[in-house]
Image (cartoon, rainbow, N blue to C red; front, side, top):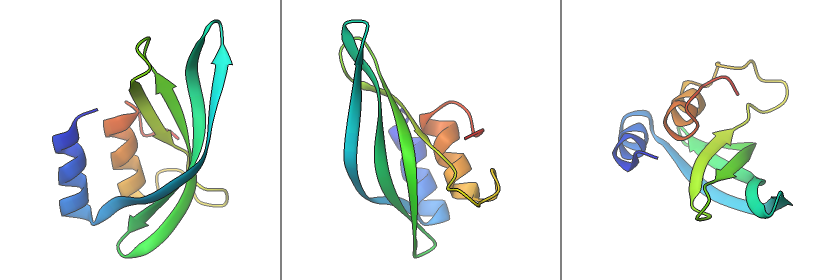
Length: 94
């Protein structure tokens, strides 16, 4: 993940991670390659609760973090979440 792009997203769009909990890592095919986490982001001063999908590389380093658009919210309608996904996930289609 590009830390500078993440910093820019925070500075320009007032978007940041407030908390995470209930991390669930899935063991499959001899590795812990994927997982999920409950996240709370701050968007323009307001909390946004969502689930994120995690993907790890062979050294168990975080490779991708893909925040899922909350239920009842139109995908792409939260530009900050789309920006995060472009940086940390490689796509804004979540």
